[in-house]
Amino acid sequence: MNSPESSSSHRFITAQALTPAAFAPFGDVIVPARNGNSSPINEGTAQRFDDLTQLDVNEQGGEACVAIFRTQDGTHVAPYALTMFERHLLGSQSFVPMAQGRVLAVVTQGDDTPDEDAIQAFIVEPGQGVTLRRGVWHHPMITIGGADVFVIERRAAQVDCEIARIKGRFVVTL
Image (cartoon, rainbow, N blue to C red; front, side):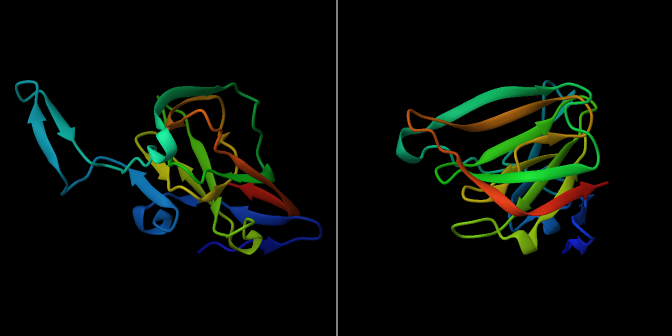
């Protein structure tokens, strides 16, 4: 685990490489499985990889919503200051950077509030994605440079986004 380091006024969190084992407490890493459930398709010109993550969006009449979130260069600038965390109690949320985009997945555990002593940051590279389990505290999306991010989340009449401001001053570095 990557613990925040103390500084005079900020605690620094170094973003780590995304691996299925390190990210497991928060959800799934989405990558083509090497030994997984795959089969050739389109007369052998492509390989299909199934069941790479589990979507959990049907609670209380929810349905899957597919969207693209776009950020411009300069939207997020390193080092990345953290201000709040959010969680979705009724559904999972998946983020897959497109093209050469990269995303920071900043996550923590916690019951009623985010656990500020357990914040971790992961770099989601092109060719990877993450699915956050319902109830996982996470910072709103941060991209490294401008990016288009493919998102699958729950949509329903009831908005499912709880926000908590954090008390500490945290900065994520690469």
